[in-house]
Image 1 (cartoon, rainbow, N blue to C red):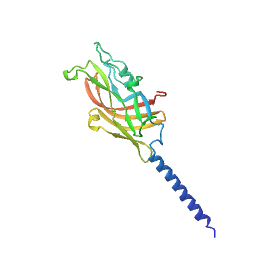
Image 2: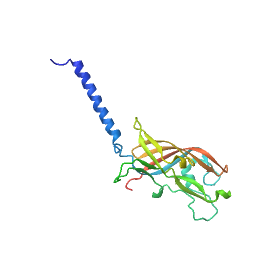
Image 3: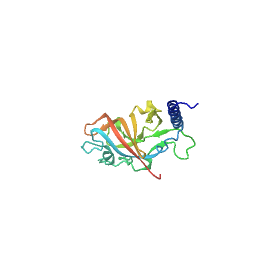
Image 4: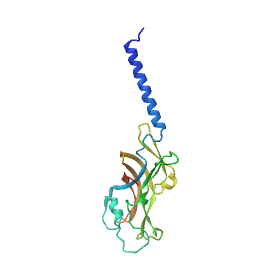
Length: 204
């Protein structure tokens, strides 16, 4: 005796759901299911919610990349006074990279943080940039969105907080960062919210 069409249809639907569920579980358990994300990325834009004078020229802008590239200084020092996003040493790194010995998911954002060499003496003329926010892991939530895990929150919290990471496409992502920034025009540090866009560096 053949099963009624409605029973066979219901069985087919349940079986399809089972297959999809198995596929999703396999993706969740496979560290390489989204293998377009790992790689090296460079910062292409840093935008603040309000204007900031980071280069001591008396003008406040929200385009912080331009502020970091052009520092007005009358002294001669051995320290780098600007940030170069095209320098490989400043690239963000997302693992596991091709050929990695393991599939651990790690992120070094390498955001350029302002450091004043003689700040303790009240001297804000000698500026350099150090990479910060470099010890993070990541995972995927139930919606396949990226979840950031701070592996050194005690250290990173001295400088700010990575609030979220959102992929724009296969080759770029946006980071929402809260950070302390020195504003030369106001002569004070202040907490600022930034949007940072990273794009993948190909063939590096």
